[in-house]
Image (cartoon, rainbow, N blue to C red; front, side, top):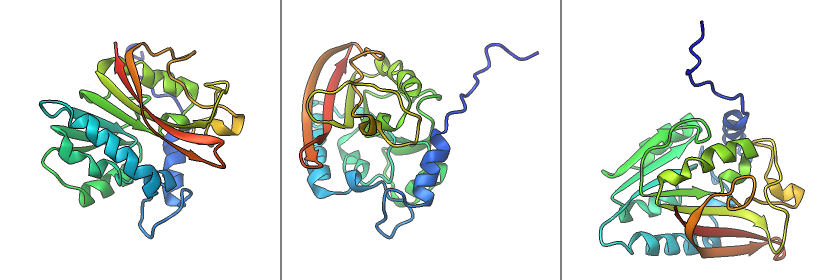
Length: 222
């Protein structure tokens, strides 16, 4: 008889989709095996982001612990490790995590291969989610949002339409993002309704003739 308490993983296509993206260089290439795309490498996007996150991380009297989910090729995370007590970097692609372990080494750095919608997340003071949720179905996003109350701070980056839009239209994981439906994620609104104490926009970058933005928010969670 099957144990009713046994955790059953949903057959979401996210893992295979992300593996295919890296295997086929669907986000481009910089002549390396793994490349996380324009948004993780263009200086106009990356440099302001690293600067504001660094300012946040160094604003504490003592260094804090950080969980970076969907860490990708770690071009960005590698610039933040030194400002933390401990930095845990997570991605769903196992070969990518093995690659990162070989390239990036620090005493306070740890890599783990996890599916953030299914697996338990390591403890940390702050969770960084940079252009990750936008690739996931609403059900997966909801599973992640339910875990955010375990963190004091959330730094969330999303690629969204500029101006007014209908948020949180559902998608199939791994098949583009909500821009194709003139939508984008807002985890403060239905069906996610994350409860927070404070919010602050850290930075934004306009693109596609100023019709879209990559926006980074800092949330202090209840």
